Image 1: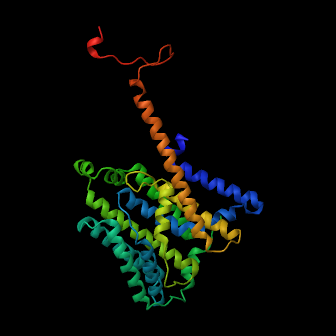
Image 2: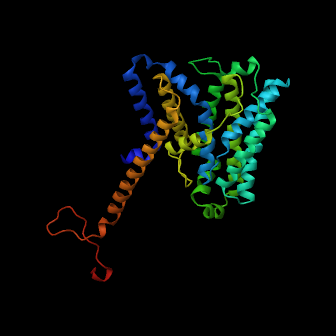
Length: 343
């Protein structure tokens, strides 16, 4: 149990395996690589958003505008393609929009010192309104086949965009685990004042966290447009809450400084796996959010109780050496005597 608490990635992985085992037990035909690739394909957008959200949450901030950023960037790539621009130029344009949106969030939080939840609630409406104004409230349709082909499987059921998602997750995981640059994010979230005294560029780190988050949201918007072939006017609605939930499930602390990118990846996969299981069992779509929320609350409550139990156990071990042994007790560390009593 202690191992599961200290390694939240292992807890998320165990939940994925158990849920997959339940699925296979109910229907053996689901035990296939195709099922896994289908879940991963559905999870790609949420994985990117969870990885981006983890960067912001590690610095003890939060961004609730990423859903709107996804929609804005999906509109950007669609409008650019329909205006005759090439696919690479259109994708770079959307990526730039996402970077600017994320950087603007960072400016509000870091330079103007507006609380992150308040600032990003404001930009959530701002970006959503900009998306609707840009598209005139209409859907963006007629996207070229060159974009749609990026979401078609090429190997083991994974598309070029899917391999790009895996590459980005691997790079982010390596960066945060192995580089001083990645450790700066943990330092800022753990203790802002101490990080500043140690020479960490605190403001730059927080700005980069929001900017990277916006860029990953832009890539998620491109993947969304590629997978369904058009862009509805409500693209991205509600994704911000799922991204935060995926991070919490994967062990990212809302208080900053704790968690890993791999944990966020597994949390996003698990939430998508729940939705996929409901679809495979042909349950009505309106059950998805209810069951996903119920599972999330259950995991959080259980996690909280287990952490309290572990904390009590650690306190008991810490102070047990100050308790005098009972008469006749064996193999008990003697009660420490004062210095003046030691001859």
